[in-house]
Amino acid sequence: MKKKSTLNKKHWLSLGLACVLSYSASAQSKDSTRLMRFADIHKDQVTFIYSGDVYVADINSGVSKRLTAHKGFEAFPKFSRDGKKIAFTAEYTGSRQVYVMNADGSDLKQLTWYNDVGAMPPRGGYDYRILDWSADDKNILVRANRLPWGIRM
Image (cartoon, rainbow, N blue to C red; front, side):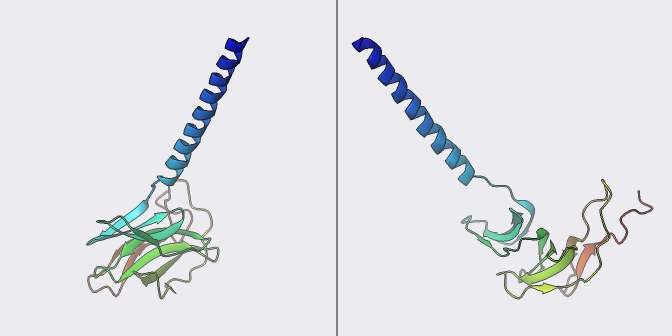
């Protein structure tokens, strides 16, 4: 009988240790998740979308800073050529628009005020995709679909 209880204790000890190890491994994998979307680099800084918000990070240290925390959709951040501003697309009021802010996240400004065009076609892509800045950083090149279905379909 004594042998049976020893095996039983060993069994429970092994099971408990396995549970602790699997929990710590799953917690570690959640913390190490890194899915950056729509990244753009300027010198030693990178801007990207993570979990629906705009971030900047130093490429040498890896330290990142969240610049936006709005509930709306955000995409396509793009540094100006001098690196002082970031243009991006966001859906804060129900329709997708173009915004610009300083590279530190301050001075957010809405640049477009278009009505929503409705659902996009399956292969139509995103509306208001930030493509680039002009050489003098005064204008932003944006791909905007003004009709949900067009001749290109």
